[in-house]
Image (spheres, rainbow, N blue to C red):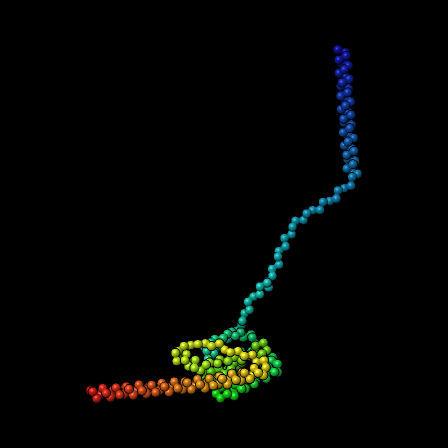
Length: 237
């Protein structure tokens, strides 16, 4: 019994000693860990990640140009073809374009105008776009200025063909012949074309006179026939 008590006391002492040793070890480890943490350099701060910035796309107000607005548009009716041509009022006028021509082009223009004007019975028709000369309804020449060059337009009908379509009441629109006046040779061609148009105008006038004579002759024949028919009826009555 005494021996058992001694053994129990020894074991209890050993347990106490072990517990004390464990506690002391834990305290030492904890202090050492704190000391290492205090001596260790502070970690670099982690930069904060900025939230993405949403930038609105720039609005291009002039990306698609607005359509041009024409202030005034005037309609011009051709006496020959009853065609309607639209021209914007903000465009340069014929006179303004003429002032911008070089001396040589101005001389060509004036020379053709004077030649057309000198034809017997020729009449001038001029607007902001072109200058035209006619005999009756026959166009001699139409002058325009395009990109610093004098341009002439001619309607050159074949007389026989023209008379044929008139007698058959067929309307044909012929595209104009366009001639750029770039040298003296072109001026000569323009004058020859005016001569052709003058002859066509004379033939056209003669053709119309002949038609009128034929209509008057036919009217006289019909009147005579009616008179004879009435006389026959009276005799029979």
